[in-house]
Length: 122
Length: 231
Image (cartoon, rainbow over all chains, first blue to last red):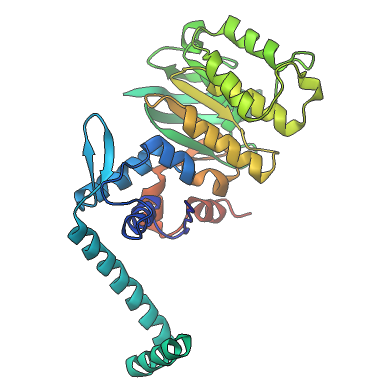
């Protein structure tokens, strides 16, 4: 998968975010076994301890779980994944609205613009 | 547990002080960047750690012991310049490592060379600069050492080769081992590191984890370095 890292935030939080997107987008499917820490580290070009830290965070959030001998798996809990998808969507939408506000669009104008664009697409 | 410890470590070349009273402890299982401009003492510190230089005063300990053939058996050192004789083939270079180092994993070296499509009978003389660097790194990382000392492993090679070298380091170091990477190419290595040491004129001016720096300063280690060492 494609990884990108910004300069202004810790790497482990960015790893958490990108792994979460991979789960909610279905790149890693529910119940699927995740690559090992080392494999993910090599793929992303980051430190294995940082990957470990990010995965522990995702485990605390209930998105992945580990089984002592067989590795780490994506949760089977579809409700939990949906919750996370919604949380990310709200976060992105909030960022978008803030950016539109900077351009001088209020909420209603932004919504109208979106509806118009949606209409054109159909 | 610490694998490398410096106590008031000082090294002078004549009147010139290369390291002045360095106190430093490296824990096991970490990838550490030794960062500083040219002439800040990076190579001197690494050479002291593998016993190629002796301290003027103070001490440096590997796993609690002064550098000796005994400590060198657990230290894998990549010098700044490739040092393998040009007449050797890749295969002979592997024989050489296998003779000298009990911890050399020949199968690992062979597998990596195969992935690079490097013919084992090719002599080092016939290899490009990038290929020589890759070969020497592969040999260094194929040892099951407890401390890897990599002096400028990504200096002077193209960006694709840099990626290859960094991924080879991540894929091959033993989880209980510590890797010390000296470089001034910080943006390239930053993601791979646990911690960074900033060396300035022979003194440690900062020793911190990468994510702590990013969290506290809101900027990358590369940006911080440019600020601190602005000319």
